[in-house]
Length: 371
Ligand SMILES: *Cc1c(COP(=O)(O)O)cnc(C)c1O
Image (cartoon, rainbow, N blue to C red):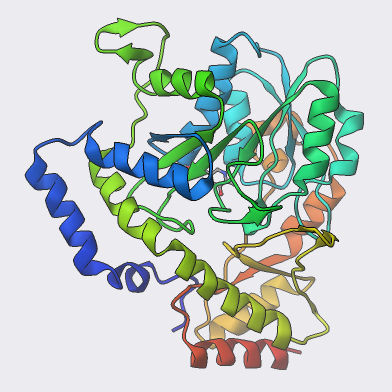
């Protein structure tokens, strides 16, 4: 059996260290808002190159709290619009509608699957307040174009970096390419906890302070509540686990790249379109940390069943676009042909950093033999 992602195998590499970390928390007698969270925030700040990181309960909350903080700061209000790629994971869009703002869906570039910057300007209205680029599958969005448009129209840039920990663009990492960024540490993400966890990164001290308060009942100081906040904190156990996992993130990214490079070099099948890494210009390399290795094929169901016959597990990210979900029934009628085509054709191949050489060769051989 070649699983899509073998979390047990990944985490068991660090078993002794992880157990130590968990024991340290148990023995400390302190489980929320303590030294581990503070230390992780510092380490993650250093890793991303930002001035601030705020640990929260999950990636969706990270995005929700950024927008909520901009509302508290008077920079956004209910009914305002945020531009977001139509083919993202639904959480990006939920963060906008949860705040009573309006998600304005923009089609992706069919070659990168990321938001097409050339389609953004015509969607901007007097109500537009932000652009939310999503570094989908681990590939950085063409941020120079996004930031230029944002500057021209006075918009905030909120990165959804949930799939792109460690990806570099023009010398800066995901999470340090806009005004604020949301990260998820869901177990299956490139940096994964052992439960739910997330973080916000930013260089804006005021924003960092407000999100920190909002995530803690709206309180900067015990029993003083400046906002009607929520409870969304990164607990000590997950923070301690993430401190261990963060040390090995770059090694895991290298292993993911090895798998991806081999797929790209060696898969050859006329039914299959491989993902590309796009060079915008010589000094603007778009980095890809291969959270997912996504191919496209008109024979998705056949290929998936064929591979499953060889015990190779594949998944589809994602089978139904957000605008076709019941949750957004008011959007069901709009036509987004590129997004719909992508959702009909994408298939994600196994991409574990622990995928061994013989399984990798086996997957490539079977895909190449598919008729
Ligand atoms: C996983 C993910 C999220 C949400 O993160 P959770 O920690 O699961 O809440 C948001 N956006 C994208 C693109 C994601 O992949």
